Length: 532
Image (cartoon, rainbow, N blue to C red; front, top):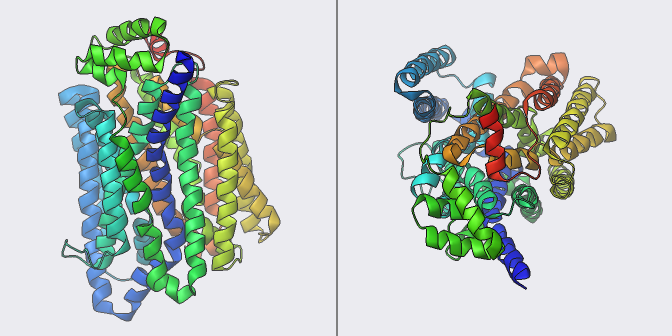
């Protein structure tokens, strides 16, 4: 009877926490249905007024400079925490100098709305939420230690709601004194901070309340929620697109797409008030009685005392240096995150309608095809959930990376050879399935497991690296895909070959460096790094 009661309690907490993942998916994918409308509404309209275009370009440049400085500060804080003060400051100075040189090289010209500038503004606008994700991921470790996993998720829910409202009517809520496109970008960044927090705290919360025997499965449900959120918004976007014609979509439709996020955001916020903090955070705050009471609900009473003792032992050093277990752990965390993005998944998720339009589909058909991609993504994520604790993390990651490499290279050749019929769609679906059964959910399982309790905040390095990689991929895709020169030479195939090569490197990386964590408690996984 107690085991049944415990299971219901754990499932209830997991479902609430996974709403953070659902909003993560909803917020990042809502942009996919609005790409064409945003370009027409904000960017193409600039051609009508040279003065306005000039003003937007300068504000865009200043915005990029400002957010990159903020990102550099966040990265510098991580570097100081990682390498201690002297080395961290030295590396930070080098980072700021490198950033200044890159910005000077890219922004040294006059403010002219040429093809390259327009594509860059488009890429930045579409990927702007990812800037907030980097910030949210960077501060996730601090928030989780200082305020707790639960309160961090409450903050994420509030930011989701603010972003949904602000990005739907940026001109009416433009309190920043900038052009409307910049106001839209700011609200998307605010939502991105919520996504960054949720991307770290939702799987962390689940991992810390889940018994080790089913932890992989439960953490994988967070990825299921992310994909489910994406699929929901694909249906929402498609339904909204059917409401009016293309011009209505440009003027009004995209606003409803962003505004629709307020419903799940408010639901998430309300439900969070009914869940407890995790036992590990309670022990960190010297609330052992509360932690034991919660552990009795999460596991059998015979195990609760043992688990509490393990947690206390692992937390004896509450603020250990992040390199306490060596640099390999940090490197593995970073590269798991980077490869998850460099294989190009968010290009498919953000730009799927644009990709299908390049194949010759109309707006409605391209959104419908995007739903098919979302359905495949969801189906194979479920497959991963039921196999991650059976087959293990490494085999799924290696097989998935190989499948992505082959299908992306094949998709690139489909574009290059101008053979973008049903075969190209099949390659995209194989790619999506390969990611969904491996690097989508399993990467989050590994990240939630491999960082020991003493340095759990170091997970923020991996999360920040993931969002930086995501920003790079999402920002550069329009620059590559819409480039007249690259299109003339490769007919839209170039970018996909890059992602295919990254898939092959990802498989090699996991095979050589990533340890298997299947069936191990968090404390047993910690011993792997102690031995190393």
